[in-house]
Structure formats: structure tokens, C-alpha cells
Image (cartoon, rainbow over all chains, first blue to last red; front, side, top):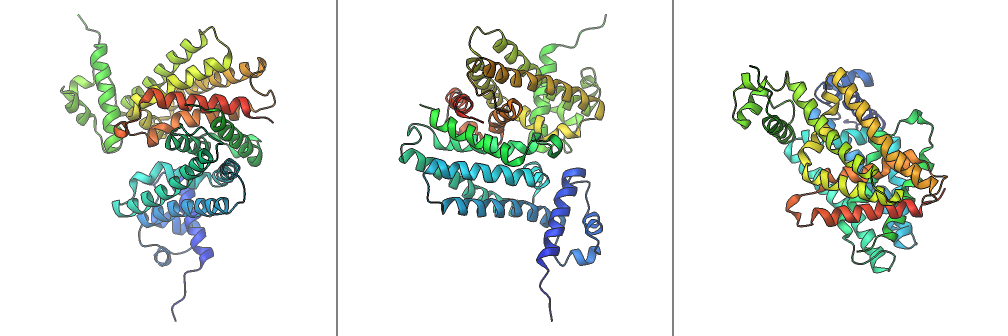
Length: 197
Length: 197
């Protein structure tokens, strides 16, 4: 009787891969290294993934999956658009701070993916970005944000502030993730309210 | 009589290297490729640089040099701190948009530098970041920004919005660089004015 790959083990593998790709670099990490880190044989690892490229793909998909859950939660909120945007920014900054390795690998190694898998990630990312652009467009319709602003530029700028944290945040720095997320949400939302064409 | 390496040629070499590192990746670009792109012999290229690592270093230094000129100009402005910050954001976004390859290489390949050269870049970057943090601290002292905000987090967030543009801007997209820079400056400054502890 075939067994389903355990979800817990699968998660351990993706987490270990993200950590190693981040610390050593993708090129300098082998499937064997990841198997060793998780404490299983290389042959067993191929029960979960079919190649190193597949491992990278799983890391990137993981980032999207969590981001999508967050955006679904935000879409279901009964609140004005900018309040939903603030909740999204807080949630996404906190996610990024808890997943520094995965997020760094996401942005650094995306271009290394095989073209087919890269297309899948690009399509997911576009869907995701459209949701953020949609939140800003809703805020414009509700009169919370100047209707003359370019919602795409505003959305990408907000995403920049949110995503950049992986480049500078050091967990040992002492700042609490929730405080930091709150401050970034205030800057984004306050900036969008204030900007005029 | 020894001749000084021509500045124009030196600039062509750095520009070609940035473009090729960005398009093909650092690992897949050789010193020979860069020499070929500029139309000189590999031996002549070593008159300007001493290794591929040195080429990468020149690309990154170039980014800092321009950013430092910009910050010097801003520091010399006779205007309130947030107005100076807005001028800095506009200038830096426009610089990033005009130098997409160099900026992408700066963030993507920094970690590949030899440790010694990496230290030099880190020191330059810290100096640069301190100047942005200083602008925000000045704005706090002048009462333009809540004194309770963490000036470091605010500065890194502003830098995130400014630097992220290289990941999403496409010159063919039709948006004018100056309009885009103006909108991002408004979001940053408006956000800092609005944020409270």
C-alpha cells in the first residue's frame, strides 16, 4: 500500500532547503546536503521532490501559499479598503520577518528556476500583485486615496517596503516584529492617504 | 611614458560589465566576454581592472558614488528636512530607473564579492544609510516627524520603496521616470508625517 508523503516531513525538507540555499547559495547546495540536514537518505528525499530545481520551486511556492492565505483573510475583512491594506501590510511584514531565508531565496534565486516552473511562479505572483493593486483601487473608489494616483506604482511601492525587510532585518536587533510591522503599515497607509496627483 | 587609463573607456567597461552580469549572470560572464563587448583585447582590459571580482567591485562602487553625490547635494539644500528627504527620494528613484542593470547587480551579486572588497562596500553602504537615517532624525528634531518613531526602521523602509523599483520597473511601460519618482517621494514623506508611535 503506497503511503502519502508526510506533510510534516515535506515541510522539514522545504525549510531545510530554504535555509541552506540562503546560507550557502543555491549552486553550492546539493540534494544530498538537504537529505543529510533532514536526516534521511538521498533516495528517500526523491520520494518528496524530483530534482533540486523542484526543491527550489517548493520553497517559492511556499512563500506564495502563505501570502495567498493572508490576502484571502484580508479580503474577507468587513472594513474599509485602507484598513484591509494595513492589515495585509502588517501580516506580510510579520510573515517576511518569520521567514527570512525563504523570502531571500524567493527574490534571489527565482531566476534560476527552469523556465516551466518559473512561468508558474510568475503567474502566481501576478495574481497576488493584482490583489494588492485591487485593494488600492478599492481605496480610490471609496475616496480614501486620490483617484488620480497610479494604483500599480502605489502597489509596487508598498510591496517594496514590505519585501525589503528581508535585506536589513536582523532578528537579534531587538525590535519586535509586530512593532516593526505596525510602523511599516502606518507609513504605507499614511503615505497613500497623503499622496496627490 | 605611462598613460592614465581613459575615464571614458573605464566607464564603458563598467557599464558593459553591469549589463552582462545582469543579463547572463555573474558566473556566466567572463572577463573575455566583457573585453569583447567593449571591443578591446582581454590583455588591454587588465590595464583597467585586475580581476573579474574587481569588475564587480567597480560596478558596485559606481552605484555608491552616484548615490553619495546625490546625498551631498541634498545635504547642501536650504530646506526643511522632509523637503530634503523628498528631493533625495526623487533623485534616487530616478537614478535607479536610469541604472537598472547596475542596481540589480548591486543587490543580487554583492554577496559574491571577495571578503576584502565586500567590507569596503559594506562600510560605504553604512555611511550612506546613516545619512538617510540622519535626515529622518533631523525631521524628528524639527517636529516634522513623530519623535517616537524608530528612525532606523523608517529609513530602511524608505530605502525599500526606493530600491525595489529595479525589480518591477520596465522602461517600455510608458510611465515617465520623473512622475514615478515624484509619486514615491510623496508616499514616503506623507507616510512619515502621518505615522505615530
